[in-house]
Image 1 (cartoon, rainbow, N blue to C red):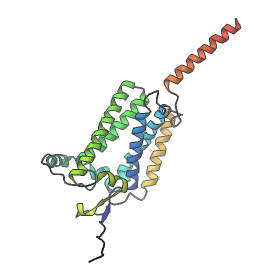
Image 2 (image 1 turned 90 degrees about the vertical axis):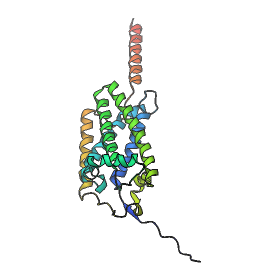
Image 3 (image 1 turned 135 degrees about the vertical axis):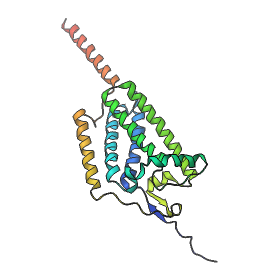
Image 4 (image 1 turned 135 degrees about the horizontal axis):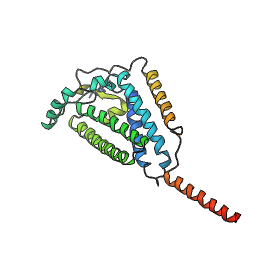
Length: 238
């Protein structure tokens, strides 16, 4: 009887720490933004700062799409010519595993970046109707994206959620694959400069961008209280 243990599966590096950190921080930011969107929410004072933090994340990802690791770069996963064949494979019941983003996943990434940015812009501009509409469209897209990840994980026998946590995938699913090329040597300082510039821009637009904001209801209550105190003072003088 052999006591040899089965060999450990060989893993390959796919997602760099920067893209994984961005992914999960954006998940948290979107969740908190929706939880804080109602004025009676316990987190309502943080709704605006969360929006600005999401803006910093978008700035980071846009830069990281040019200087990040191999599979984080836009040039390596935006491939419009592969969308048609990918859809035909899915409709035929086949799902070819993709080492990085598959063609539809690439579209989802771009759509999520665009809708998150539009939600932030309309929030800053004060277009409440457009802001809510785009925010709910973003929430719907997040739901579709999560469902697609679960379906593709099942069809391709590839745990995409776990890969975005560990940054690694099983090599036996990708015989010709290799460890992804790392980010550029100056990627971190370049991304840090971009985030810093975005933060500076945010504070130029809103000096209290990253501080809790009083809700509209609190402001109205304060104005009412101030008015009542003023009237009481006038009566005392009389």
